[in-house]
Image (cartoon, rainbow, N blue to C red; front, side, top):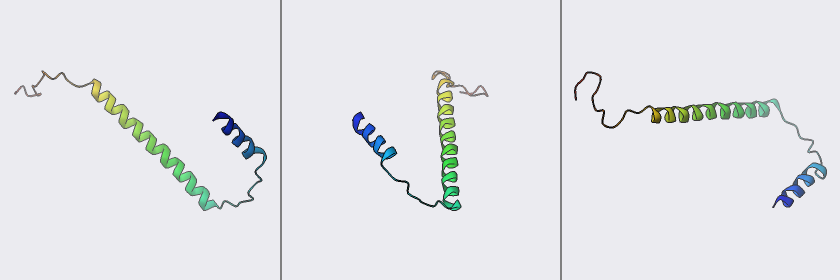
Length: 72
């Protein structure tokens, strides 16, 4: 499997010719926007997961059923 990947990498680097393609500014802007959106979504996702883990460790024991007013 690794030899196939190595052969593909060598082929991609040394054999394939340049595409001579044009990337207009609109395409680059969309790519940058997608990258920034993915970074923002990843940050929110991991912040949410860290909050959930923190709440798990801060839970009260099950036997403590009194609320702040002292009523049961």
